[in-house]
Length: 93
Image (tube, rainbow, N blue to C red):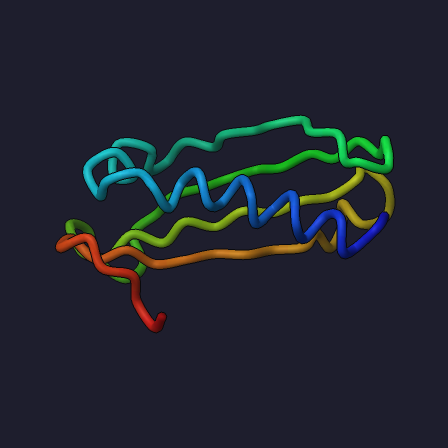
């Protein structure tokens, strides 16, 4: 797996979720979105995105995305995340 390519694809997918309002992310809690994407190299990757409460219901929402190529990396996928407050602010940025 091309780690640099995978990280960029993951960053792009997570950027789509960063544009969503808090209420839309809350609606995705306890669901898993899955995507198959192809990198510039032609390599195919799987991305999974999950939203969940960061510490307590009705509080901050953590959005976590992982990517792997279906090979050994699927046991330890690359991961990126962000946390959004109910007021629409990103935590620790």
